[in-house]
Image 1 (tube, rainbow, N blue to C red):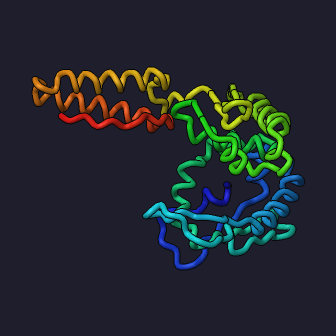
Image 2: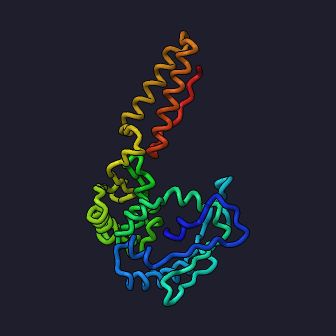
Image 3: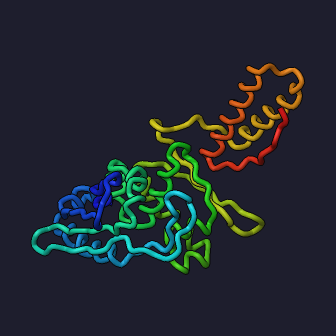
Length: 264
């Protein structure tokens, strides 16, 4: 993430964009000593080189792009100089500006204190929903996002004990973010997870409970139907704006509300 922050996502590159990361930067963000940071830099560059993306979505169409791509074209650790050089794959440049928007420097400094990879990944996931303070996700998608071990996928109790609860505890202790969660079940099987946490006051939208949101939207629709014979043009516009606002709030919170066409 340090290296990613050094790539200009708006610039046109003719070759793989290169970033240099110093061990001192890792030490500062991670809160570790410089010797440990040297070791982490060397191990990190090797692991990063081995990582690949199994599926990309076309930046324009949103459709899957077949095949895979490595994150970096090359990664070198410069011994006795305390820095590594990372050359990102040029195919990923169009996506970098979007990634940089998601992972700001403040978020990196907050997540840098986390020692568990599961804590880091959960924190990343939660921050994507910081405007609402509410994340609802299927168990399958959650397992894929955090790259859960096979044993965690096979047994939900293992996922809860080994991943979810320790990650929430560490996030609370290291970052101070108070996260609560509950399983969503269908019969006897846990099919989803719900996480709640304080919203970012700088970006938070007014929160409306899903049930009230659906009820309010239904009321608007019924009112439109009831008064469709004598609504003035201004009233029609107002009703339309209300419907649109409810739809935006629902979309922002990942709430699915059945669409209903109303003849004006």
